[in-house]
Image (tube, rainbow, N blue to C red; front, side):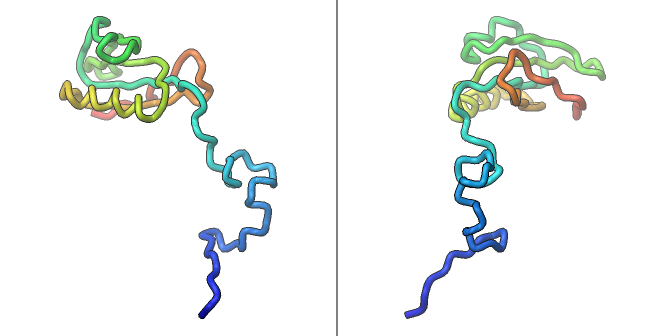
Length: 122
C-alpha cells in the first residue's frame, strides 16, 4: 500500500503556520473572513417603486423609493439581516414579487447604513 499525502492548493505542506497560529484573521488559518456572528446590515435595491407599507412583508426592513441617476424608480430595502438563511428568504420574496434585483450590498462594519451602489446598470 502506498502512503497517502495531503495536497494543498497553495503548494505548501501545511507546516508553515497555516494552522491558525500565525496571526491570520480566519478561524481556519487563512485570511478568509470569519463567519458572521451577529446581524449584518444589508441594502437590497430593486427596480420599481414600493411604498413603506411593504416593510412588514420584508421582515421589518426599511423600505423607501428613490430615482436613480437616470430617473428610473428604485426601491431600497435596508436593515439588519440575522444570517445567510434570512438573506436568502428576503431574496426569495423579491423573486416572488417578480421584482428586478439591482444589487445587494452588505455593510462591512455592521453600522447604521450601507453604501449605495456607485453605478447603476440598466
